[in-house]
Amino acid sequence: MINEQWQMPHLTHQPREADQLTDQPLAQVTKILTLLALAVFSLYLVIYCVYALALFRFPYDYDQGEGFELYDTVLHAQGQWPYRDSQSFPFYTSIYPPLFHLMTVPLVWVFGPQLWTGRAVGFAASLLVAGAIGWGVWRASGNRVIAAFSGLTFLASNHTFHIGPLFRQHMTMVMFETLAIVALAQMDRQTLDREGTRDAKFSPPFFASLRFSRGLWLGLLFLLAAGYTKQLAVATVLAGFAFLFLRGSRRALIAGIGLAAVAGGLFLWINQATAGWWYVSIIRANINKFDITQTLSLYRQWAGLHLVIFLIALGQLIYEIYFDRLSAYAVWFVFAVANGALSGKFGAGESYFVTATAAACIVSGIAIAKRLSGGNAWPPHWAITGAIAVPLLYLVQARLTLHLYTTGPIYGLTARVLGVANESGYYDSQGNTQLGPLPTREDIEAGDAIVALARQARGPVFSEEAGFLFKADKPVVTNPFPQMVMYEAGLFDPAREIAMIDDKAFGLVILRAQFYPDPVMVALEANYQPKADIHMNRFLYHVLEPRP
Image (cartoon, rainbow, N blue to C red; front, side, top):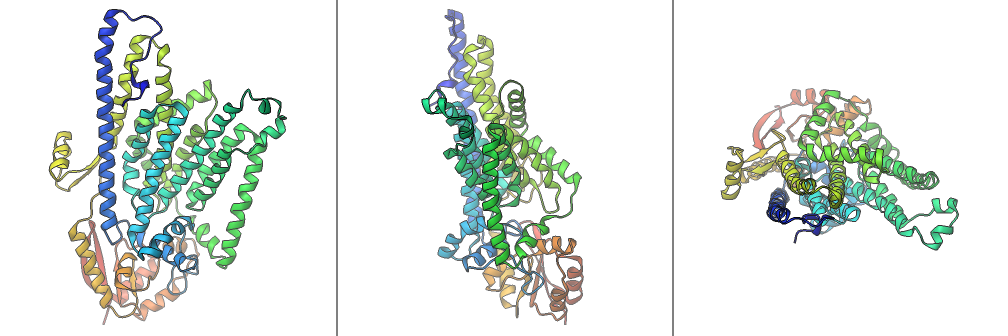
């Protein structure tokens, strides 16, 4: 059923017969466009689920580094910290906080070290983000249809689609960020609910400013969880406290001191338990090169893909600045978009804008729903235009983020109708992208061939992807990306690793992106020779064996 707010607004004057004849067909047009837009976004959700299920079945790294995330989880499952001296064998450390991996530990206990475990957690987190967005819009406006559009728009984003079903902690961080801001936003509603009551009326201002509501407690808990999922959540933490400060400086100060004490205590405990490698790995190793060109390119990409919701959210922000008071969502939108500047870091990418997408979805949804709810005061022609424009705007947004598979009877027909049919089997409005295409049977067979070579090798295998090592029952050795950034920061000395390479201690070497420090790559080239080149997931894997 279409929400009542989607019906033609009730006008204060008695409509003429001509008005009724005009309004009835336009009301039907509005319903048809709304159902069409919902169908389009529902199709995006189906495509997303198909993609996620395909990744659940794929036993190897789809995105480079997933296998190392799994190894972090395995270490936690064994009661060990992954933050260690990477200059000693097996030359391994992790540069991410532990919460996502700890959430995945129960699945690893039950099912063993499988990549689908973390992918399932990430996928579920993306669905929870969409649900939280929809709930936040509904609580703020009472419009269920716009709430549904807001949540589905997040799932239809190219960036959400690419990253959601990966064994990565990023989507879980966005989940905690969204839950935190939605919880904090309820403080305004709770304050309004208390207005006019005797307790609120006669409570001293000082103690009223220190009242900690359920929304505040939940918000602080989720902010702590987001920060211990990934460091990038610092922008949302700042946004949360900026909002609290706007609502009461004393309460914000006390809440900030409390959260800092808990977060700092955990930090010091883990740092002591890891002999200081937690600080080196989590903080110092994440300070790396910055490319402003990359940042600007990713800003253009994100704004182009999400232009409709971005402009509407921006308009709502301006409206709140000049005619209302800033909401938690508007403050979050500002900080989340600004945090995209960190996407210029080496190793960063489109994932740094997923939080901004969530914020834009919720702010734009509230803006649209509130404008519709005020439609009763509009002139008739403006009310009709607004009602028709909303589903059209969402359809335009859906076209901007177009991504679909192009083979098969349904996908193929849809692609031909939209004029995006191609032979690759996948179309993405973002352009050529590593993430999105479905793994094939040939990809699995290619991975099996690499695993067979690794299993036959004598001794440990020096692999740039850990997924092969789990299948081959080989120990995980090295973590290339942290090695590279730590080497460039002067935190990693590869001397011991190079010594083992010179001794040909590794029975096989598996390379893809070759993200190791330059001295390590020089040593590998000097001591190992090509054995096989194998294509998997549109990448060429170089398998090397020791030189005679």
